[in-house]
Image (tube, rainbow, N blue to C red; front, side):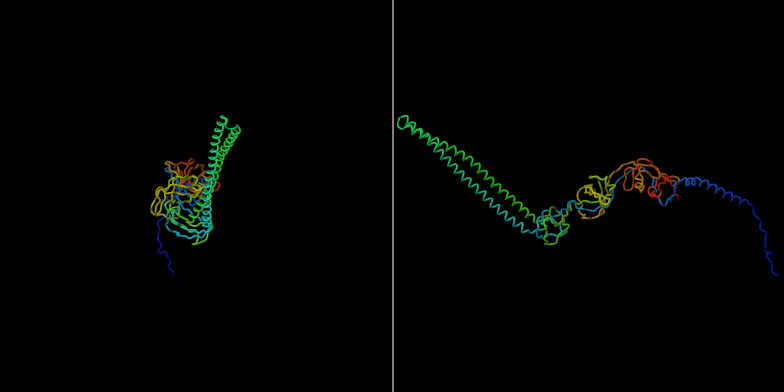
Length: 423
């Protein structure tokens, strides 16, 4: 026979249902509490225009405090004075320096050989010598002519005096009956002729003297003009020795050694290392706030230097504006052309300003509205923004200190004005 399990069975006492009831009651209370907490949120969510996950958004609180507007960018060291030297005449060029050489002011950097200019200078010098001889000859001729005119005038005066004496003598003799009246009349006619001769000699002396003076002046002006022409050619020949206009360093050579160049061709550039500036690129939105003379900081090589905005380009290139800062004081000696430095320009500094972290909401709404977050909802609110900096934007109206707003990601809201923020 097969034995059953009746021998191993034992009676188990059933406990009271009180503990089970307590468990059921507690679970019921929890469910009611959960429903009481969830119903308002569910009603809020159902009233929202849309729902967006908080992980897709960025938030920031409105605060009050100091507000500093500045521009920070990378700058490049450039030479404020970097002249480029050009060929003043066509010819063969011999360079006496090489790129990187340190040069002094008025040091010869290149020599241009121009046979045509040298020949022209020799010709004009010869013409100047001829004009000088012509001028000197006119002076000699004028002196000779004046002497002849003076001689004619003096002879006429002598003849006049002799005629006066003869007339006086004949008149006396006629009074005594020694000579006829015809002799007296002849003496009078001779004196009248002498008077006319003196008058004309005096007029010729004055007139010809003025004419001779004008002729000498004309010769002198011609000579002076030729001298100026020679001096200008001498200047051009001297400029064939291309000299450095500043103390500095040779930057770049634009021609090969002993190359033949045309007039006004680029030869060399010289960098004045004592007048370095820092050039930075500023976004167009900030460039309108820049002004010449604004203070700034230039940092690099472990050091910080004070600077000032010295120039702002009037042209916008690729959405940026070029600006330059000069060092406030002596230019640091350790800097080099095209070296990269950090630049910061202070635009404005105020205290007790209502601000919020800068975000894409400024551009998306043109600063006209923002979404304020409270109790899981983002409500659109009209605002007005003021000045902005790299990381903050000034709030003029529509928000108060402590408000929490969506600073980026609100573009996903579309046209919704009430958006539920889900976890």
